[in-house]
Amino acid sequence: MRHFIEGFLYPFKNIGLFFKYPKTILYSIIPVSLNLIIYVLSFVYFFNKIMYGSGKLTGAMGPDPGFFAEFFHAVILVVSFLILLVLCYFIIVIVGGIVSAPFNENISLIIEEALTGRKTITIRGSGKIRGTTYLPN
Image (cartoon, rainbow, N blue to C red; front, side):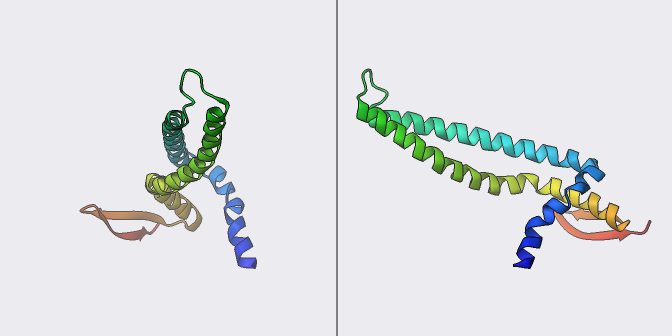
């Protein structure tokens, strides 16, 4: 249990590194902004589709909908809102990891160089990372 608590608190202990090395803040703003845009756009798009489909299904979009049509429409919207929150969260976890991967690599290189004092270069060739070399100071 001690390891779980230490692991859970680890990001909070190291948040100071972002403020100590301001270049890392710039590398984190871009993926956070992109992920927020992806989340909001996907949520709004799918919720609009659900609202339209629910209105047509229950008859709430008709000229004079009854009480039960409006009630079922509201129930469907509330339930679909909660389900859609969870589904969009999973979408953002998957897509967000892909979007933020290059930025996370740059952040880790900056922090590693600052903490260890060793300059790191990444040798790339034919689209694949071939190795990492530490350069002396």
